[in-house]
Amino acid sequence: MARHKVELCGVNTADIKVLSNEEMTDLFKRLKENEPGVKEKLIEGNLKLVLSILKKYNNRTDNMDDLFQVGCIGLIKAIDNFDLSHEVRFSTYAVPMILGEIKRYLRDNNNVRIARSIKDLAYKISKLKESLTLELGREPSTKLLSEKLGIEEYEVVLALDSLKDSVSMFEPIYNDGGDVIYLCDQLEDKKGKDYSWEERISLKDALGSLKDKERYVLESRYLIGKTQMELSEELGISQAQISRLEKSGIDHIKKRIL
Image (cartoon, rainbow, N blue to C red):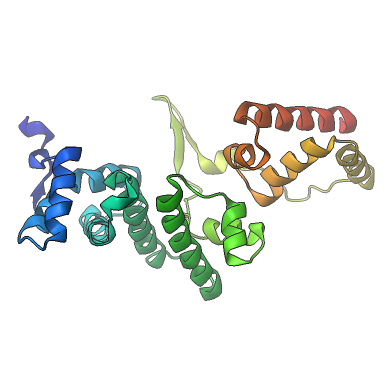
């Protein structure tokens, strides 16, 4: 097994112990009683949770040691704030907090600068999202977040989008052993492209002829940025029905303008 050994910050990842749910519950009870050494055991027993999250960031930073330490900060914060009375798995509670620390670190060390007002709003939304996820046992919809904060849904989407990592145009997205396809190969060149007034009128008429539910789904999906799952919960129908409404709406528009 030596060939699988990986070290981060001097920690041999092959030797990391994984705690069972029963062990975790017992340790958190003992932590509440301020028993010495318990917090360290909880940290060590959840390092693989941090590592599992770091996998998706392998190509985002040159120093995984730094990112591992940042992830551990998120883990420690999760341990300090976790409450057994909420009856959720620790991993369910900890993952958003670990991800939040990692994303903040990457964003603050990113060459792309985001306006301070948008950053502040994004932090506020993220904090609310974490607390609502713990309270509801699932991620809150953008509609719920906007209602809680008294802002428009599109403001929530724009702020959360600012937290996403920037991607190089020359990032490889496909390689079958031959020629590599880069992201820039899939970007449309809109230079010099202009839509005629006839096309604009046709598109407006096509949108106006949609059924109310189809139009609402398309506007929510492509203007506000809602997911099919969010719309499913909002409208009280299955995700498959949302998908069919979206497809039928798009097909209807194509027939009217093509």
